[in-house]
Length: 145
Image (cartoon, rainbow, N blue to C red):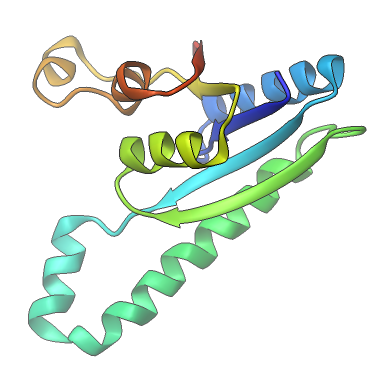
């Protein structure tokens, strides 16, 4: 477990996932990468495409800046002593970006929080966690709420 990837969305479950990753990395001498995906919701994207396309790049920057602040906040809440921490913000769709990063970075483990979607919604949409489980190139540890 030398390289651990932890998707962070700002929830308490992702904080719990991050702490679990730190604990494992401390025991095995590993490194941890906190990853957040900067995604502009379709309705916001479509609004800016129709009304002011030039502001779309600025909006994307703002989303990325907010994501970086969130990652810094998560790191501040954890005892990361003795663990090398990396932080990444990538654009894209959550599950695709997570799997892509796991493949490119040759991670040994993904630690991800379980989402609390209803069974009906999960049936039609599927959760990010479920999609990562099915597509990940490495082991995945799912942390309950």
